[in-house]
Every structure is written in C-alpha cells, then in structure tokens.
Image 1 (tube, helix red, strand yellow):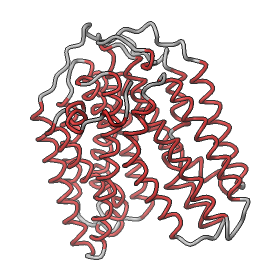
Image 2 (image 1 turned 120 degrees about the vertical axis):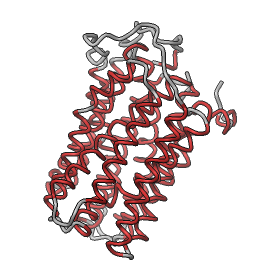
Image 3 (image 1 turned 90 degrees about the vertical axis):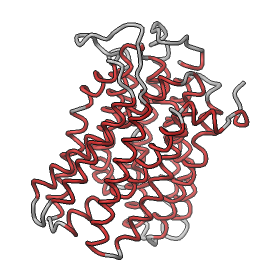
Image 4 (image 1 turned 45 degrees about the vertical axis):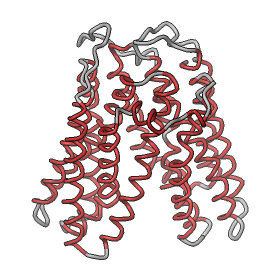
Length: 412
C-alpha cells in the first residue's frame, strides 16, 4: 500500500524527469511568476497602452495558445517529450524579447509578445505531463505530477512576491524584471533540452487517427466545469468579500495566500493518499467536495458583514482541498485512459478543455455575482455536482484501452 511516508525525494525527482528537469521546472515557474501576474501592468505602465487594448492582446494570446494545442498533441505523439517542453519555454523567450523591444504605444508588438507568451503557457502543461507519463507509472506518476504542481505554485508565489517588490522601482524595474524573466525561460529551456527524452510508442500514431476524445467526452466536458474552482480564490471570493460583504481587502489576500500554501504543502500527500482508490472515483469525489464548498460559501455569505468574511475564509479551505483532489486526479486519469500512441493528443485536448474553462469562468462568475449569492454559488454547486455525477456514471469507459503499461484498478 502506498503511504505518504514511502515518498522519497530522490524517487520523486526521478519520476519527475530527473534533477536537471526538476531545476528547469523551478526556474521556468519562477519566471512565469515574475511576469504573468504583471503583464497587464507592463502593458499599461511601461508601454503606455490602454487597459482595454492590453486586455484584448492578452486574451488573444490565450486563444492562440489553445489553437496551437492540436499541433502540440501531434508533435508529442511522434515521440517528442523534452523537446516540446523546451520549445514551450523558448517561445516565451521570444515573447519576452518582443516585450523589451516594444516602444511605448505600440500595441501590435505587444500583441505579438502576448501571443508567443500565450502559446508557451498553454503548451507547457501537456508537454510536461507527457514527460512524466513517459518516465513514471502508477502512483509514482501521480505523485510526480502533484509534485510538479506544488513546485510550480511555490515558484509562482515567490515570483509574484519579487515582481511586487519591483513595482516600487517604476518602469526601469519592470523592464529589468522582464529581462530576468526572459533569462529564466532561456535557462529552463536549456536544462529541459539537455534531458533529451524521447518516447517510442508501441504503435505509431497516424495523422488521421482520432485521439480518445469521443470516449473521454464526458471527462473533458466535466473538466470545463471543474476548472472554475481554480478561479474561485482569485476572482469569485475577492468579488464577494469586497463588493458584497464590504470586508477589508486583507481578507481576499489572506484567502489567496492560504490557498497557495495549502496547495504547495498538501498536493503531494493528498494525491498519494488518494492513489489507493480509483482515479475516476477520486475525480468524482473532488466534484462533491467542491460543490459542498460552494454551498458553504452560500451559507457563509448569508451571515452578512462581521461573521461573513471569516466564514468565507474558513470554507475556502474546503474549496482548496477539493481543488487539490481534482488537480491530483484529472491528468493521471487522462494518461491512464489514453493509448500510448495517442497520449499527446489526449493531453492536448485536456489542456483545451482546461484553457476554455479558465477563459470563460471569469465572465461567468462576474455575470452571476450581481444576481446574488444564490445565483452564483447555487449555479456553481449544481453544475459541479452534475459533472461529478457524469464522471462517476461513466466509470466503465476507457477500460478497453491498452497503453505502455498494464492498468491497475486505481488507474481508472
């Protein structure tokens, strides 16, 4: 039986792609943490662009990244692994270089920079998951994916703190921060490239082959709803706490910090703990936990000013636990369901559903919030619970697939 105590750091690093690859992940995440939260401020403050123009350019970059995902999936299915990861980092180097040479007021070059950054950001998760799925199996694969997410969250937090300190230095400090980000991406790309990991699927995928999306349609559709939980601490809770409960801005900040700390510290232990159960059952359980937290938020907001903010903060812990269970089970489930020759396309389609969910959730949350807590939290709870039920009911799908290694009961 897998236990938390059985995790050895050396084994986790090895299952994650090796020491150099682990360092590449940390450096890349630090660079992303430096730039991603402040790209909008860079466009507005340094380049003197309007807020709407900057936002549109950033949104276009996300869309471009999603459009490129089918090509990324096919590249992975041809056996490329560390090369795709390195490419996702190098394309962001190009994006940062464009940022540095963009003159003030030049929206087109900023849009091009945002496009390259968006492509790299969207391609990385699928490429990284393919690397881990190639070098590790079973619970070790789950733990390695969880460890990568924990490491990334920690580095993102550290990068965001450093970037916040740079804000005091004005435009010069922001340009220096962008340059440091580009250097971080280049260093990470070189380290990832040096791993030289290439897969040899048992059967070669042909361009006309269909990835297992039709058989995983329920899972991918449910994932769009599940992904909303990732934007709850960043968008929904600040909106509710500040505009409806009239709480101090300290509360949203505390919730966000607590979310980050919990993900960093609990992602691996919780994922390993859940690895003794069927992955599909765990994913369904995460939906139930998330739905329960949304009901909890509804109850907490009814307390009004005073007790409302502390209650929301307490319920946010439950929501974070649901997020941790979800993140620790969805990618391993997809890698277990997909045939080896179509793993890349399956992961690319998962990233498409994730990116779509992340793109539409801010608009959905901000549209529902003015209608009242019942509309927001009731809708989220109902749709998430429905998605969890669909995932659980679809449990017999995927057992026919064969991959590079035999499936255990916990795989599905």
